[in-house]
Image (cartoon, rainbow, N blue to C red; front, side):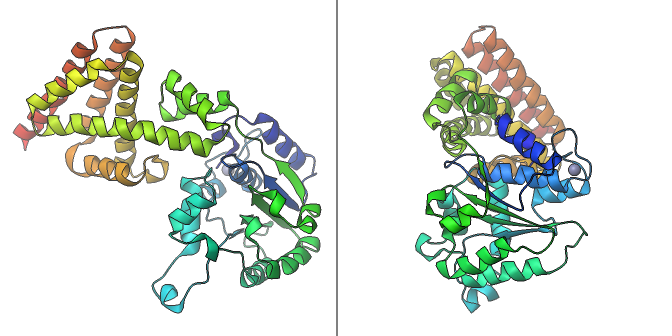
Length: 378
Ligand SMILES: [Zn+2]
């Protein structure tokens, strides 16, 4: 994750970059901020910048070998510690991959909290901690030489889950760290931390996002129209996690609708098509435009899927299934491009106040035509 993929927060990014440039970065940092803030994302932004082979200005380049590995969080000198449960022998035999799952969680939900993590890991909260055993592993890992001759990083997420029996060992190593070691501790709840840990770390406070930061991020990166994005931003109170949840709610309904449109085109169900047109024309203009943006969003995801760029996909779960099916069975790349153009055109026309019934009818007729040509071909 690069700094540039985190919306706003310029002052925090600048402070971090300057402390690297001026050699003022402490060897133990504590990133803390409210839930849904960018404390984890910011720590990853800093790590990417530090390991980048060719930093561009104040950010990692995003393309070098280190940056590529960083995107998947598989940099050999970047180690993770996070709350876990004790695994039974059977579970370990089944190949439960907590680290792999943790990486996936961080990549997919960089603004997620402990509840999202628990859900993604299918665990129960009361079992979670960073155990004495884990602390021992941390110490052991850090006593080994770095893989690439540079420095090692130990990123500890959810450090408030540190078991008391593990705290002392960890404190000691933070106090007397092996050479070339960077500790990055991350928490949403720094009041739960031991004062001894607090006093040994340089604190990096990551404030919540402003409404403007959330709004412009939703508009530019998630194709949410500006009125809706503003509404979500206000309701999110600075939490990107909440903003994503609200965005998903909006999008779930919209994806469902578009799925229905496409299904009626694929099955040549013209009655249903006209029913859809009628429904559509009853919604307000912003809702209509937003639906077109969702259509464009889906098609963009299908294109990414077709080009094996899964790591860039934003959809999850059911939505992702739908995208995968469209990509595998229904549409080839030309079809997607054709539909993309048509959705774009429809958006353009709606913006110019052309009658919604007319716009959607011609869009769906174009898609229907495409499906007819495909069926005739095959
Ligand atoms: Zn790079």
